[in-house]
Image (cartoon, rainbow, N blue to C red; front, side, top):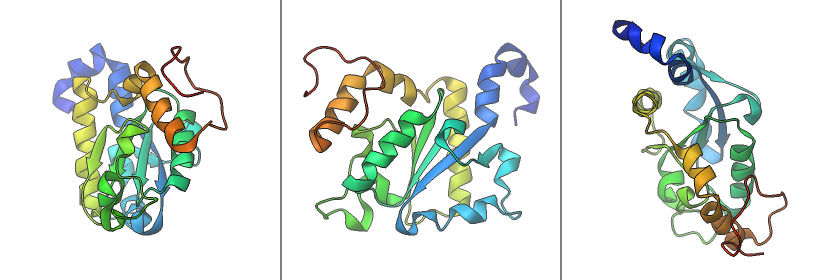
Length: 188
């Protein structure tokens, strides 16, 4: 905590609230979930860092994507991301969401998650240890503090790009666009 920077709290209470109240929803496939439960236990105690697991995306502002992402699971990831309220932050957890991991050569593995939703940070490893989660969280704190964790703003401003990539992969989406689309910039 920034106890030495009390003035920062008084000047920007909203930013400090966002920074130290990360309510996490995580999307886990395969081995990706194995390191998350230890983070929540008394040994690591994520709550002391303000990281609290929540049940639904509508309550969350931190999205942890763990394990490999397939074409089939990508739709659920996009839907979950779009249901989260702003400001929202996304972290790819482990090698698989970064580059496909050990499934990199599979035909249905997504190798560039950031083409479909914005990703604010990556935690490398197979699987990253609980310590790595806290390093990622403190890195995210710094990004929020400096105004660099702006994935949700990029998603809104460049929605045509993200929605276009989504529609190229899936065809017509089952749900209406989250934001208005510019004419002629996406497939009908």
